[in-house]
Amino acid sequence: MKVLFVNNCDLPGRVFNGYDLHNALIKKGITANLVVIDKFSDDVTVKQLEIDALERELIIYEEEKNCLKNLLFPYAEKLFNLKLFKEADIVHFHFPYHDMFSLLDYKLIMDRRAVWTIHDMWPVTGNCTNPFECRKWISGCGDCQRYDDDYFPMKMDNTAFMWKIKKEAYKDINPHIIVSTKNMESIIRKSPLTGHFNDINVIPFGISFCDRKKEKRNKIVIGFRLTDAKIKGCQFLYQAIRKLKGYESKIEFQCVDEGHIPDDIEKRFVIKKYGWVHDKNKLNEIMYGWDIFVMPSINESFGIMAIEAMGSKCALLCFKDTIIEELAEAPENALTAAYKDEDDLFNKLKLLIDSKRIREDYQRKGFIHVRNKYSFDTYVDRHIALYDQIMRG
Image 1 (cartoon, one colour):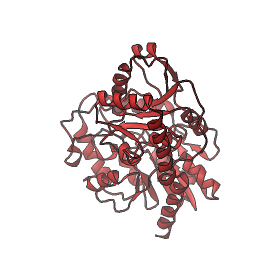
Image 2: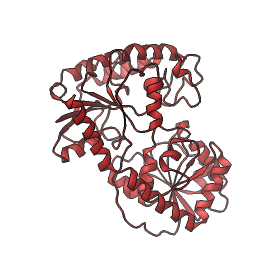
Image 3: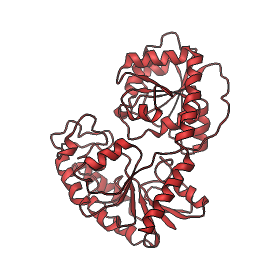
Image 4: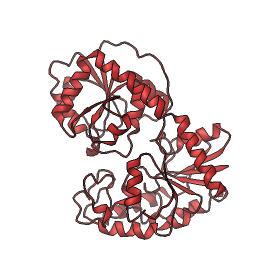
């Protein structure tokens, strides 16, 4: 079996973008390679697509100027002509729409060997990655209230046009689809753009576990993902933190990713910023230093960091009515606050800080839950089984 993974990059998001999976396949004796545009590793099994970097930046500029996304990139033919592509039994795509290929060229590269893991809702909307309560993705988008999406911002509303382009682009392809939740499966089936895709597989993400004791510290350490994307909900966490009067000497905050913390919070609390951590062993070590992990996302496609944190014996705090609540099977294994309620988020965070018994109970239950349901070995084996099934026809 020869498997070729295709993604825009290798190390950022490695646990879900194919990089860790391709290495796991190699360890099992399967020939696996990864093709990317942005290469950060020195891995010889990762092939960087040979493109003109300046040309790509100019295309990004033109698309942004004209409120388009993934229409002008001419790199599908370069992938098509690669020996690795021609010889592969399986070609597994992850984020082909991250400034990599034109949507209209998917029919060239997504043949009967194609597997596509759909991570968010951008493929089925006019532009946004998470439409929240909006249902226009079913009827054609347009008159959009969120065309300036955090991840793919438009200067003007061109969502109806992009929706039509996607419908045209997908009509001649039928890749084998992987999603991580039943909710995403339902969305792919309901969408007029992807409703004809007839092989949709639910494979939850998995993580590797390191079962060890947490070190005792003088302060309670609270971890979170630092990002300015509104969908990740840090604005609610900041309001909750502001209400923590008299806790300055008792707690410490640590965060990964890149974003900006309000000055008044930085002046009051000890905050350690790690930036974006590519090394999964280092990330696991960092997370094992956290007592609590707050994930105040208001919408997620899966929420792998919640699983990673629970697997590092952190007590998880998230909002109700989210995918995070579902995958954690809260309230049994995680503590939840009312949706978008900063006061309730403060109360639940304070409870975890004040009560060692409750905190340690959620640490224990959360770890057992993800160990039983989200093993990386199971994640790998499910992919291999799907690849075998595709090759058998």
